[in-house]
Image (cartoon, rainbow, N blue to C red; front, top):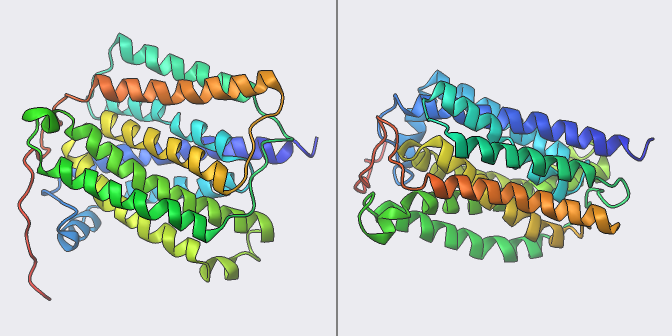
Length: 319
């Protein structure tokens, strides 16, 4: 019984973190609709605009709470369990986008939501207390070797999307997926750093790990990549429908962290054949569902109040 307790706790914490995380996105999206145009190139203006909105700050607090619980979950159970459940929180986002943001859900969308539910059932049936233990050792050199080129590619994709005019040429037609891909890759790197922090918590306990965490390069890598991802993502979120950009970014970040993170932290898939099949089917089902959703809505215009034109570079005067 005790062998299953961390697994059950990890699943429960992941579910709560996914709910908080996606509710936070919807709250931020509502706030961005009433804010002036923001852009990652104008960091000072972007930050001042965001922190001036109590509604955006409320959404940001929910996001932070969701990410904090994700770190806790990663200290209890393996990446291949946490990430698919975390991504499946988009069901909450889709429903709230429909109710709160007026982003319409059709029959196809509800079929995709149902497919996510079936995929989650497959993952739950594949849980294995023996193999689904969280990895507790990570190498900063390996993490950096994966992270640096990923960050470079993410920035290149973001600025390519930013230069494109919506609907003009092939680049304009894939502008929203490019934004999502860029933000997802940066958040994937941040999730790797979060996994490294969670490994320290697993090794030393929550309280005793604090001195090690604050002196660890993983914490600062997490802070830098999360901040960069935030700047890119808020720019994209203001210009694109939440029901497209959030799933797109989530599926990219989760795929990245499962593939790269499982290797870096030496985590294993279930050993029993049928459980392994269910795990793979569940993971692929979640990712396919989210990718289908994003592809089906990639050409949608941003909601009213969003900014479609790529803004000019503005150099702020020194203060």
